[in-house]
Length: 285
Image (cartoon, rainbow, N blue to C red; front, side):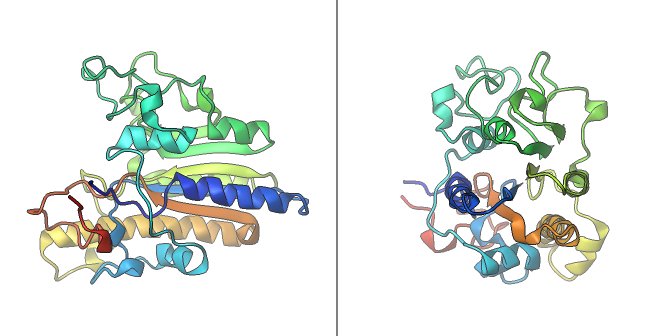
């Protein structure tokens, strides 16, 4: 059996949301929910999980102050179906989505061109419960710029800005602006319960690390330096979101969930890019 690594899974979102739902019976305010999803991040790519040189203090703070789930699996080893599972709470195969959405391949795979927006969806349920809903960052619940693909508002999002999604390439969100968009959403909705997705590009290829993050990892072989830098950029985005919650006075009434979508991209024994990405569970048989 092949184990696929994530830091947290959809189970976390469901179980913790249920926990706070029970609290709501005695609390006059609904908890805000922020769901941060990294792309192709390995379990061992974090300093809280023992990485030798990548430091992820902001993600580590979530693990230290909250719950760190270390027995887990992912609904699928690639992007689109794992995201379908997060959005629906169901196995993506129920919707015939078992691979990433890709023009020219979907029909041959027996797949639709996008997730049907009429299915039961977490953002719509929360919006119907009185939440303001937002989605910023990667989408990939359809292929890039697919003609006729539904926009995120059809899935229950009040506000959104995405890449790897529908619409014109000229209007898509730059991949390195996800944190800023989420921070703006939080500030604008601070007086109203909200649910927001922050779906990051990092550390998916192609890698485009910031100059500052590259400077932090000088002295490493270039391949390691680049990968460490993009993980650092992801951690800094988490830090921006956490700082925005704190400065907005929302820290104590917000559930923050962090996960990777499906674990690291390279799984072969020849891959040395990801440090202990599978942790102690190994690759399995």
